[in-house]
Image (cartoon, rainbow over all chains, first blue to last red; front, top):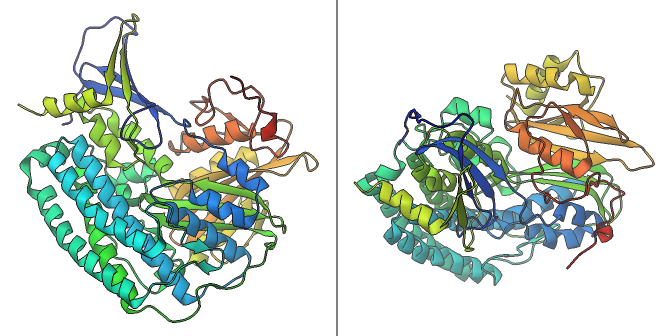
Length: 401
Length: 154
């Protein structure tokens, strides 16, 4: 619902600032946003991060290469495998170690299962923010299928700990492979249904079609990555652009949409779930035989490397520098959300306050279950406090006519 | 285009700015440029549509070396081009890229608060990750910063 800013009679220099966060039930990493509004229309937006800054980049400089695998895997609970894999790929490159093929394919299978669970998690949250709780409940029920598969393979639902420097920790047996195939068949069927709902449910379309439009030029200018960029027609996917590990053999499809609105972001993620199912099946059918690990040196050769992996939210980027010892000199981690955050701030302008939850959710920032407070503050000092739930209700009511 | 061809085109674009270069891996090119040339080099890449700014890394080479580096990583398909700027550790400073690449602001704020590298002309110099009451002049990713020195109150 894009509107031209209305003329509102205000005193010179007076602005309504609506602070949101840092605590709220949706974002896992708390963030603090301030939206300046003119009537209902957002005219400016800023963000403040760091509420869960844990100093991991400093921490890795006093731990050895093996300890850091466990540390870095815990950067993100949703894409833990991505972080561990990005780190391992980089360190293995520095050590000039070739990981056995079977281990590479198992890494790919874990990465794609993780993408499915992450996208389904997002679908549920996005449906909830739109006030469509039936879709939320169904997607999260179905998401348990992929969570069970991850647990079946690794014993864990969250930090799967699949990676080792030089390979993977566990194998996939033929029985497990059959269970994965069955689970994926169910998920692929459900996914077709969700795609139908998203593209045809008029109530949901009212919240997502034509909302938060980002053109291809904007996406490129704002540095958007991952599904957020691909929904605006930017052909960018690290798995295809700079194939790593088993992605050299098993190719994902490039999923592109051109509309650039929230609907396109739904469609891209849903079609990516379907493609991940296809890719996992292909990998299971062609699982090479052989070892799972190769021996890694304790000290890593001096040098610098860059490791890039397509996380569920876009490119994860690691810069790794070794000084030849068993402790890294420097590891720089750049996660995808920071790249897409710029698009939220830019897209907010000109939209209604009621659209903010959906625009923020549209980039799929990391989510959790804390309560989120909103303080409505006026320049004369009057304050009114809203919970995130109230803003969500407000957003939903604004669309009930 | 292959990574090598892409990197060759980047090298041609930046030819006048490059003081040194290195190819650490076959899909990467590192070029050293002067801090004053940074916006010009980035504008040349930007005008030619060469890749996107993927990350900015700060490197502290330690108090003995007395130097720091700011690394600007540009990705284009399989290729990664890194613009490296050497800085003195006493008063490190780089010009902002925000007028060319608005999203660089986040990376610059991080570089500035973690390493104490001044970003000249930056539109927003607030903390991005560190708390508002973080002590002035303390930069946690510098090599001589000891996390144990942080007093935990309360």
